[in-house]
Length: 298
Figure 1: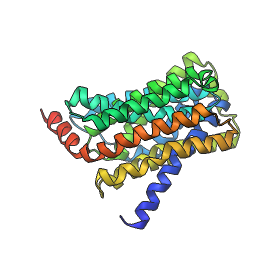
Figure 2: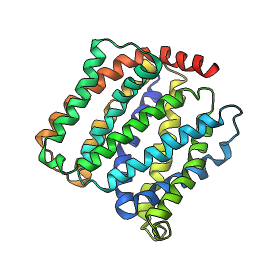
Figure 3: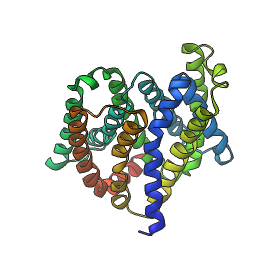
């Protein structure tokens, strides 16, 4: 791998890790639905020139946008709005990997051997260990919402695989275009006046919202798609493993969060499980992608 591309992956990892802070600051200053509506509005402005109609794929694009866009971000922002110890959410978000594997088994008929079964088990055991920590138990609502968001992310990742061949900026443009009215309407109903009052938020808050829209949603995902066109999945995916640990560490430092035994042990156990799944699944990814392409052509 070219050194410049390796540095780019590290940059993406940092962008995704810092996004935990960005979203938490935004939802503390602005209502969660309003914050994510503004995030997608900024992403829409950036991607508007790339939006094109994709014949025969629009239903799938719309479904992906509702699940991986509006639905996923609704739970992410709400979980951060009701949680103080956001480091726990960074660890719980790792469940996207085992959920993706479970869905691949259910819907793609993929067969997994004991090593990845052990990885799935460890990933969930780590979250359970965290849950028994009194400091984390008080954050159970936020952790639960994050688990739901991880499941939606996993469903969305499978849908994204079926959109192979569609330019990533076009996909994210449609994702933003469809998500903005849905989230905006939800904010108007459940957060009366939040969207209007958000325009008086400090400039720093707007900076974090813009960071989420550009560096996390666009640079991160579009950049990763570009890298996957140049390198095998087995090369790229393992390099994203540090993201949740960096995210948890940054959150602890930035928000001055307590580091409890349950958090550390649970994080390590869960991370080992996710690492097993990621490293083993990366080798299986091309085969899974071929299955999606065959099904999409039927």
